[in-house]
Amino acid sequence: MKFFVDTADINEIRDLASTGLLDGVTTNPTLVAKSGKQFIPLIEEICGVVDGPVSAEVAATDYDTMRKEADKLSKIAKNIAVKVPLTPAGLKVCKELSDKGVMTNVTLCFSPAQALLAAKAGATFISPFVGRLDDIAHDGMQLIADIVSIYDNYPQFETEVLVASVRHPMHIVEAAKIGAHVATCPADVIKKLYNHPLTDKGLAAFVDDWKKTGQSIL
Figure 1 (cartoon, rainbow, N blue to C red):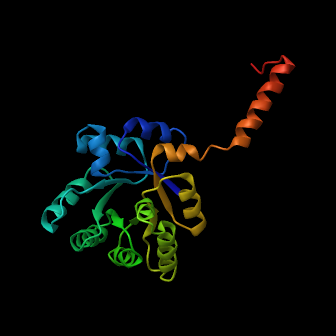
Figure 2: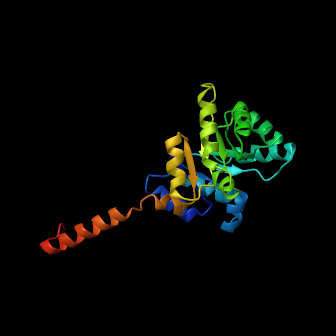
Figure 3: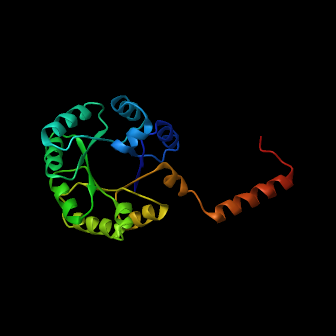
Protein backbone atom coordinates (compact mmCIF):
# COMPACT_ATOMS: atom_id res chain seq x y z
CA MET A 1 0.00 0.00 0.00
CA LYS A 2 1.15 3.50 -0.81
CA PHE A 3 0.95 6.27 1.80
CA PHE A 4 -0.07 9.78 0.79
CA VAL A 5 -0.28 12.54 3.37
CA ASP A 6 -3.42 14.65 3.31
CA THR A 7 -2.11 18.11 4.12
CA ALA A 8 -0.91 21.40 2.67
CA ASP A 9 1.53 21.96 5.55
CA ILE A 10 4.93 22.00 3.87
CA ASN A 11 6.77 21.30 7.13
CA GLU A 12 4.72 18.15 7.76
CA ILE A 13 5.38 17.05 4.20
CA ARG A 14 9.14 17.60 4.51
CA ASP A 15 9.22 15.69 7.81
CA LEU A 16 7.39 12.66 6.43
CA ALA A 17 9.33 12.73 3.15
CA SER A 18 12.56 12.40 5.13
CA THR A 19 11.38 9.04 6.53
CA GLY A 20 11.04 7.46 3.11
CA LEU A 21 7.47 6.44 3.96
CA LEU A 22 5.76 9.07 1.85
CA ASP A 23 4.59 8.18 -1.66
CA GLY A 24 2.53 11.27 -2.46
CA VAL A 25 0.44 14.18 -1.21
CA THR A 26 -3.22 15.13 -1.45
CA THR A 27 -4.50 18.65 -0.92
CA ASN A 28 -7.91 20.29 -1.12
CA PRO A 29 -9.22 23.87 -0.83
CA THR A 30 -9.84 23.49 2.91
CA LEU A 31 -6.26 22.36 3.58
CA VAL A 32 -4.85 25.15 1.42
CA ALA A 33 -6.95 27.70 3.30
CA LYS A 34 -5.57 26.38 6.61
CA SER A 35 -2.01 26.80 5.35
CA GLY A 36 -2.50 30.55 4.83
CA LYS A 37 -0.30 30.38 1.70
CA GLN A 38 -0.90 31.22 -1.95
CA PHE A 39 -2.16 28.14 -3.77
CA ILE A 40 0.02 27.88 -6.89
CA PRO A 41 3.38 28.66 -5.20
CA LEU A 42 2.50 26.21 -2.41
CA ILE A 43 1.73 23.39 -4.85
CA GLU A 44 4.97 24.15 -6.72
CA GLU A 45 6.89 23.86 -3.44
CA ILE A 46 5.22 20.58 -2.52
CA CYS A 47 5.99 19.11 -5.95
CA GLY A 48 9.64 19.96 -5.38
CA VAL A 49 9.72 18.03 -2.10
CA VAL A 50 7.78 14.91 -3.15
CA ASP A 51 8.58 12.77 -6.18
CA GLY A 52 5.20 10.99 -6.16
CA PRO A 53 1.77 12.30 -7.17
CA VAL A 54 0.64 15.62 -5.70
CA SER A 55 -3.11 16.18 -5.95
CA ALA A 56 -4.13 19.77 -6.66
CA GLU A 57 -7.87 20.41 -6.81
CA VAL A 58 -9.84 22.61 -9.17
CA ALA A 59 -12.06 25.21 -7.53
CA ALA A 60 -14.71 25.58 -10.23
CA THR A 61 -17.83 23.47 -10.58
CA ASP A 62 -18.79 24.33 -14.17
CA TYR A 63 -17.12 22.49 -17.03
CA ASP A 64 -15.58 25.41 -18.94
CA THR A 65 -13.86 26.99 -15.93
CA MET A 66 -12.89 23.62 -14.50
CA ARG A 67 -11.19 22.66 -17.75
CA LYS A 68 -9.18 25.88 -17.81
CA GLU A 69 -8.16 25.47 -14.16
CA ALA A 70 -7.20 21.84 -14.78
CA ASP A 71 -5.04 22.83 -17.73
CA LYS A 72 -3.20 25.40 -15.60
CA LEU A 73 -2.70 23.00 -12.69
CA SER A 74 -1.42 20.21 -14.93
CA LYS A 75 1.42 22.45 -16.10
CA ILE A 76 2.81 23.10 -12.60
CA ALA A 77 4.88 19.91 -12.53
CA LYS A 78 5.04 16.42 -14.04
CA ASN A 79 3.90 14.82 -10.77
CA ILE A 80 0.65 16.80 -10.51
CA ALA A 81 -2.57 14.81 -10.25
CA VAL A 82 -5.43 17.14 -11.09
CA LYS A 83 -8.21 16.60 -8.57
CA VAL A 84 -11.77 16.92 -9.87
CA PRO A 85 -15.15 16.29 -8.23
CA LEU A 86 -17.25 13.26 -9.07
CA THR A 87 -19.77 15.20 -11.15
CA PRO A 88 -20.64 15.06 -14.86
CA ALA A 89 -18.40 18.07 -15.49
CA GLY A 90 -15.62 16.64 -13.35
CA LEU A 91 -15.65 13.29 -15.15
CA LYS A 92 -15.65 15.00 -18.53
CA VAL A 93 -12.52 16.92 -17.53
CA CYS A 94 -11.05 13.71 -16.10
CA LYS A 95 -11.50 11.93 -19.43
CA GLU A 96 -9.86 14.77 -21.36
CA LEU A 97 -6.88 14.91 -18.99
CA SER A 98 -6.48 11.13 -18.93
CA ASP A 99 -6.42 11.03 -22.72
CA LYS A 100 -3.52 13.52 -22.58
CA GLY A 101 -1.61 11.39 -20.08
CA VAL A 102 -2.24 13.73 -17.13
CA MET A 103 -2.80 12.07 -13.75
CA THR A 104 -6.24 12.62 -12.24
CA ASN A 105 -7.79 12.13 -8.81
CA VAL A 106 -11.58 11.95 -8.76
CA THR A 107 -12.74 13.02 -5.32
CA LEU A 108 -15.89 12.94 -3.18
CA CYS A 109 -16.79 9.36 -4.03
CA PHE A 110 -19.46 7.81 -1.80
CA SER A 111 -20.79 4.86 -3.81
CA PRO A 112 -19.56 1.92 -5.92
CA ALA A 113 -21.61 3.25 -8.84
CA GLN A 114 -19.68 6.53 -8.75
CA ALA A 115 -16.38 4.65 -8.59
CA LEU A 116 -17.35 2.66 -11.67
CA LEU A 117 -17.97 5.87 -13.60
CA ALA A 118 -14.59 7.30 -12.55
CA ALA A 119 -12.75 4.19 -13.75
CA LYS A 120 -14.53 4.35 -17.12
CA ALA A 121 -13.48 8.01 -17.39
CA GLY A 122 -9.85 6.90 -16.98
CA ALA A 123 -9.18 8.29 -13.51
CA THR A 124 -5.72 7.58 -12.12
CA PHE A 125 -7.14 7.59 -8.59
CA ILE A 126 -10.61 7.34 -7.11
CA SER A 127 -11.03 8.84 -3.63
CA PRO A 128 -13.80 7.19 -1.57
CA PHE A 129 -14.37 9.01 1.74
CA VAL A 130 -14.60 6.37 4.47
CA GLY A 131 -14.65 8.64 7.53
CA ARG A 132 -17.50 10.79 6.27
CA LEU A 133 -19.58 7.67 5.62
CA ASP A 134 -18.83 6.36 9.11
CA ASP A 135 -20.01 9.71 10.46
CA ILE A 136 -23.50 9.12 9.11
CA ALA A 137 -23.68 5.49 10.27
CA HIS A 138 -22.70 3.95 6.92
CA ASP A 139 -19.87 1.42 6.60
CA GLY A 140 -17.01 3.25 4.94
CA MET A 141 -14.80 0.17 4.67
CA GLN A 142 -17.56 -1.78 2.93
CA LEU A 143 -17.45 0.85 0.21
CA ILE A 144 -13.71 0.20 -0.21
CA ALA A 145 -14.34 -3.55 -0.39
CA ASP A 146 -17.07 -3.07 -3.01
CA ILE A 147 -14.91 -0.83 -5.20
CA VAL A 148 -11.89 -3.13 -5.02
CA SER A 149 -14.11 -6.10 -5.89
CA ILE A 150 -15.62 -4.32 -8.89
CA TYR A 151 -12.28 -3.13 -10.22
CA ASP A 152 -10.80 -6.62 -9.83
CA ASN A 153 -13.50 -7.91 -12.18
CA TYR A 154 -12.23 -5.70 -15.00
CA PRO A 155 -8.48 -5.89 -15.68
CA GLN A 156 -8.78 -3.04 -18.17
CA PHE A 157 -9.46 -0.64 -15.29
CA GLU A 158 -6.20 0.95 -14.16
CA THR A 159 -7.74 3.29 -11.58
CA GLU A 160 -6.19 2.96 -8.12
CA VAL A 161 -8.38 3.01 -5.01
CA LEU A 162 -7.17 5.88 -2.84
CA VAL A 163 -8.80 5.64 0.60
CA ALA A 164 -9.61 9.16 1.83
CA SER A 165 -11.15 10.72 4.93
CA VAL A 166 -9.01 8.40 7.05
CA ARG A 167 -9.56 9.00 10.75
CA HIS A 168 -7.42 6.42 12.55
CA PRO A 169 -4.82 3.66 11.98
CA MET A 170 -7.40 0.88 11.71
CA HIS A 171 -8.85 2.54 8.65
CA ILE A 172 -5.42 2.07 7.06
CA VAL A 173 -5.02 -1.52 8.24
CA GLU A 174 -8.51 -2.55 7.10
CA ALA A 175 -8.03 -0.86 3.73
CA ALA A 176 -4.72 -2.69 3.26
CA LYS A 177 -6.36 -6.03 4.10
CA ILE A 178 -9.06 -5.34 1.50
CA GLY A 179 -6.43 -4.51 -1.11
CA ALA A 180 -6.78 -0.75 -1.58
CA HIS A 181 -3.81 0.72 -3.44
CA VAL A 182 -3.34 3.96 -1.50
CA ALA A 183 -4.36 5.55 1.80
CA THR A 184 -4.20 9.31 2.19
CA CYS A 185 -4.07 10.37 5.82
CA PRO A 186 -3.35 13.31 8.07
CA ALA A 187 0.27 13.25 9.26
CA ASP A 188 -0.71 12.38 12.84
CA VAL A 189 -2.57 9.25 11.70
CA ILE A 190 0.46 7.99 9.76
CA LYS A 191 2.65 8.58 12.82
CA LYS A 192 0.25 6.61 15.02
CA LEU A 193 1.14 3.52 13.00
CA TYR A 194 4.41 3.42 14.92
CA ASN A 195 2.66 3.06 18.24
CA HIS A 196 2.42 -0.15 20.24
CA PRO A 197 2.72 -0.44 24.05
CA LEU A 198 4.90 -3.55 23.81
CA THR A 199 7.37 -1.70 21.59
CA ASP A 200 7.59 1.09 24.19
CA LYS A 201 7.92 -1.42 27.04
CA GLY A 202 10.56 -3.46 25.26
CA LEU A 203 12.63 -0.41 24.33
CA ALA A 204 12.51 0.89 27.89
CA ALA A 205 13.79 -2.47 29.17
CA PHE A 206 16.62 -2.54 26.62
CA VAL A 207 17.68 1.01 27.53
CA ASP A 208 17.63 0.19 31.25
CA ASP A 209 19.65 -3.00 30.80
CA TRP A 210 22.20 -1.23 28.63
CA LYS A 211 22.73 1.43 31.27
CA LYS A 212 23.54 -1.32 33.77
CA THR A 213 26.47 -2.48 31.64
CA GLY A 214 28.16 0.91 32.00
CA GLN A 215 29.25 0.70 28.39
CA SER A 216 29.06 3.11 25.43
CA ILE A 217 29.04 2.27 21.76
CA LEU A 218 30.62 5.62 20.91
